Length: 365
Ligand SMILES: Cc1cc2nc3c(=O)[nH]c(=O)nc-3n(C[C@H](O)[C@H](O)[C@H](O)COP(=O)(O)OP(=O)(O)OC[C@H]3O[C@@H](n4cnc5c(N)ncnc54)[C@H](O)[C@@H]3O)c2cc1C
Image 1 (cartoon, rainbow, N blue to C red):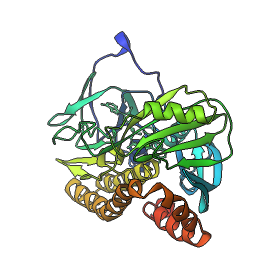
Image 2 (cartoon, rainbow, N blue to C red; image 1 turned 180 degrees about the vertical axis):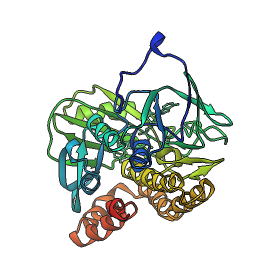
Image 3 (cartoon, rainbow, N blue to C red; image 1 turned 30 degrees about the horizontal axis):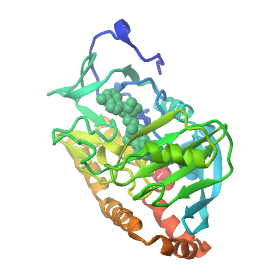
């Protein structure tokens, strides 16, 4: 795969390209689609406004089983057997039935891109759809199969623009100070953020400390800085974004939407990496069957749309819990969490949670 630095200024030459498959977005969802097309022999173009792995889009925490099943453990930084949840009146330690790991974004993207075989990569900003493909700031790319893995903005939709802070979005911001830590920690505390949570994810030589708000109108910068200060970590190297918390249609007007562009980020936890990988793989498999002559593009779109829709109830259920948690009186939170932290309950709840997008899916075909 050709790797080049993001083209800027005069180096950003014009192009006019044709492909069999055009994947817009080279993060988790887009690279997962490319991975499934590696044996297809088709001309696949992947386009992103940045170089692959250049801009980290999350705290990079994922169930370890996903890194193992995808052969991505080379990106792993730290692994945690328990989740520590702080509330104003107590701390509960949740023993996880499976472990959770942090990873290095750049390394993971490089490894995943390698698995995608020799697709062509172009740095360009995707602007809109055209009749035959997409328009970018460097020219047009035409392809009969187009994937939008561009994140929450759902750039290739013809629908009403998704406009924060009024859309169904959460917002998240974190800092990445140097330092070390041993625990995966969450804070549910209205003094930090009225509806949402804070986190501290250690990742080797740095700790990712952040705050997410389920209410998009609530700002997260001051709470993030305050949490970092409480933890005696300097608030430096900021990274943040909007996070969709409502699942959307996974296909529209002939386009496959995967990951945040389809609202495939789980409400409540804002875990969107494994789901971006999961739905990216699902879309990639359907597209591979089109390229292999085993189904039509229309059938692939219908099958992928139905696959995503079959998960809608799980996303909606988590959204209900997301809406409910901020209403729990703070005094009731600590006892509730300590009951839920029993080994039996965590095994039951976390296994159901993992099953929404299980790593077994990777070897299921
Ligand atoms: C602060 C924060 C922390 C988070 N932490 C976690 C976590 O620890 N674990 C977890 O599972 N989830 C986490 N999430 C959620 C997670 O980041 C997303 O759900 C996930 O990144 C979605 O993956 P994606 O591939 O769909 O989109 P993205 O990762 O957002 O990738 C979209 C890609 O499209 C490119 N792009 C966007 N627009 C254009 C354009 N117009 N033209 C060209 N390229 C474009 C971007 O450069 C990017 O490479 C976090 C989110 C935030 C904001």
